[in-house]
Length: 132
Image 1 (cartoon, helix red, strand yellow):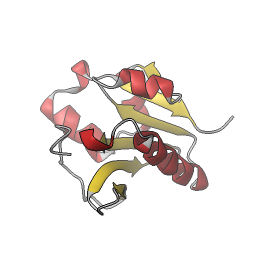
Image 2 (spheres, rainbow, N blue to C red):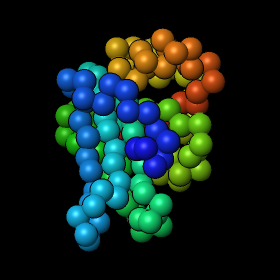
Image 3 (cartoon, one colour):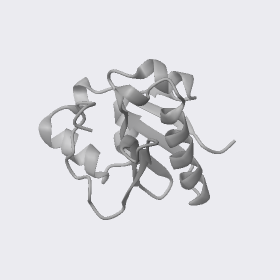
């Protein structure tokens, strides 16, 4: 996360899950996290180290996290991203108003943290529906 300049606040809050991908040398190459709600999940801390990019690792981590959310009956996945919109759009996400994300996941640690810092007005929210 440090290499991707992503925050590490509230990483180990109960109810959050993280997946870590290792490279051939067993060194961390990518990660993604999820903060759950009843009908929605907030993906966070998605990053792939520069040395591992372009190999499909980010998409594989994303699809693994989304498959787990589907198994738990979650209908929608949300995330904040101001810099990687092209990736999220390519993987089926669409930009939505930030208040929609906040209404869907008001108790998510990252939502509360961004609200406390006053960052919500400058954030970009994304959503992918997980059920047809």
